[in-house]
Structure formats: C-alpha cells, structure tokens
Amino acid sequence: MQARSIRFVKKLEGNVDDYVAEAINFIQKNVGPEEKVICALSGGVDSSVVAGLFTRAIGKRLHLIHIDTGFMRSINGKYESEIIKERFKDVENFEVVNKREMFYDRIFGIKDAEEKRKAFRKTYEDVINEKIEEIGASLATQGTIRPDIEETEGNIKSQNNVDTIFNVNRLVEPIAGLYKPDVRIVAKKLGLETYMRQPFPGPGLSVRTVGEIDAEKLKNERVANDITERFIENYFMSLYGKECLFEPVKGNRIPFQYFAGTFDSDMDIVPEVKKYLEKMGLKNVFPFVLRNKTTGVKEVKEEDEKIRRERIYSHPILLRGCLDSVMLKKLGEKIPENFEYSRVFYEVFDRPDNLIGDYLVAIRAVDSEDALYAQPLSIPLSQLTSLGEKIIKKTDVGIVAYDITPKPPATIEYE
View 1 (cartoon, rainbow, N blue to C red):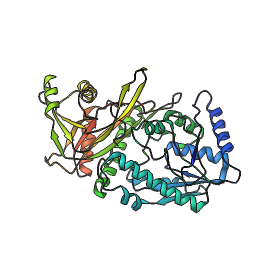
View 2 (cartoon, one colour):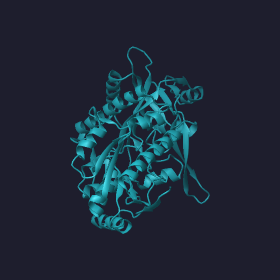
View 3 (cartoon, one colour):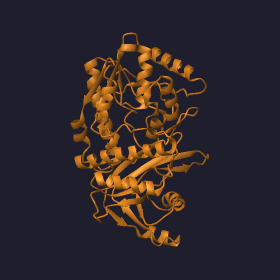
View 4 (cartoon, helix red, strand yellow):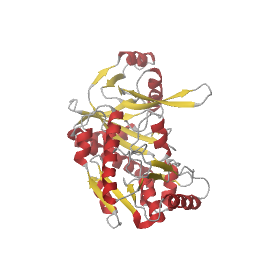
C-alpha cells in the first residue's frame, strides 16, 4: 500500500536550534506514544540526521536498518557496510541486513539507467517491508531531502526514497524541506561526525557502474572509486591541510562531490563533432562517442519565463588530444549545447601497452551549493594523469578520463 507521506517542508532559516526543536516537535506530533518507527540508515548525512532527530523525539521506539545492497563503496579498501556496522554496534535497535544477492539478482544485466533505479527502489521497498512486518512498525522514515523530491517529480531520475511503497500507516520525513548544505548544518548541531561526508547515491555503485553490470565490472568500479576519493582528499590535504573545506554559515562542503564512474570501453569516432573541433582550430583533437548512455538535464524556458528541467539520456563524448584548461571548460559547455550528447570527457591517461582494456573510468569532481547546479573542479592535468595511472595499475581499466561537463547539462551522478 502507499503510506501517507507527511513531510516537514520548513526551510532552515535563522537559528538552527529553533529548527531542530520544531523538527522534533513535528515528529512527536505525528508519532503515537506506543508506535514503533523503522528508519533506513545508509550511514550518510541525510539518514543520520533523520535518525538523530527521531532518537531525540521517540527514543528506543526507533529501529535503524542498514541494508547491505552489495553496491556500497569501499573506503581505504574496507567495505562501507562493515564500517557502518562497527560505528553503530552499540546503538540499540540497530541492524545490518545483508541483501547483496537479492539486489544483484534484480539489477545485474539491466542496461537502462532509469530501469536500474526502479529495480533498486522496488528491492529496497521489499526489504524494508519485510523488516516492518518483523518489527511490527506502524511508521517509517528515511532521509528524503528537497533535491530528491525535485529530481523525481521533474522526471530527471527517480530516487529510491521518493514515492516509496511501504506497508505502514504513515511515512514521516522530517528534513524534506532541506538542501544538502542545510542538512550539514543540522548534522553539525546534532554532533554527528557524518556532517562532512560527501553525498553518496542511495543506489550506490549500481548507478556509477554505467550500463549493464556484472560482478567483474562492479569490482573494478569499487576499486577505482576508492582510489579516486582518496586521491582527491590527499590533493586537498596537500593544498589546505584538510581533506575538504567546510563553510559553516552556508553549510557548503568543498569539494561537493568526487567519485569514479565505470563505463564499457567501446567507442567510435564522431565525424560531426570532429568537423566542429576543426573549425575551432583543434585539428589534433579527436572525439569518440561511448556506447553507454548517461543521464543529463536540460533547462527549458516556459512562456511565463519560468525554467523547467527535462531529462536527457544520451551518449558521452570522449576527447583525445592536447587541450588547456580554458579550452576544456569551453568544450564541456559548448559540445552539449551544439550536439545531442549529455557529457564531455577528456582523456588523461591510457594503458602504456596500448591495450584497450575492458573499461573506461570517468572521474567526476564538482563544486556545488545545492546540487541543482555544479561546476567541475579545476584540478591540474598533471594530478589527473597521476590519478589515472594509479587506477590503471589496480584495475582492468584501459582509459581514464576527466568529466568536464557542468550541471546542467549533465547531472552530477551518471545514472
């Protein structure tokens, strides 16, 4: 059945203590004195804030469920579900549910990004509903925030925590009016160490392993993503003495997000884009179209001057050749404007033995204030080359590229 969704849509304006007090009051008004509540806990900042607010509001009647989907990332070589299990081991009513095989059976083999997300959401619902019956919960909650709702309602991409079908009376969502920076401010006020954690999608590496997934491709993605995250954090450490920066007033994390996406290596030259580049004087730059498709977003101006966003699902372009940072920024914006391609990648390293390799890895690293708009980080090409070399040494990847596309026209995640 479709649970009645009750969302606290208040924005974070003014005193954060007042917001926390109102959110707790909202929960207490919508949860009966004897009711049990189930909360899906990914371990990220959104679900951790929800868990923190509910714990303060109803105490031990909250049941925290972490689903090991098999698509969690690795951090310094350690699988994240194991890290979360250790972090919450002393929390009452916390449980890790291993459903890797269930998710693999339903998602491996799917090519289309939106179908993959829908399959993930249906599996997520089934697991939570199984636990609802076991616990005897009459309410559910999850870390739904404003961008999740906007992207789902705008048909950009469906989120696993929006329009979910849970077998409970009500679905109470206390941070549905917040954007990510606001959630970080609340998390810091609650004393949660996760307030600085970068975003990680609900479907995890299933949407970073682009196109059809199998065990080997997923394994390569997990390794490449781990190497990328550590490399970017070490790069920031060398510059600022910190793995990332935090702007406490606005709640911005710099960089906003950074990760690797794994693609199949199949590609073909694109004559029309080659001619476009030659007209710009770039005769020694070669564009290739990848077989896999990625999700993007197009802004359309309505008659009333309002901006509407539409989903794009198209192939990325890979550029090979010598380009400087100014030209890369220009091409990342102009190629999607002039052609039906969702993204532009720039090759930074390939296998020295000239073997194609099974996969291409794209590095995505962006700054953003609200996840609605984003710009690629300006990382020196020498650093990106070094990162590419590290990835190729540890994986079956043949090419490493840097994603130079802003949002829009690209989304931050690939699927």
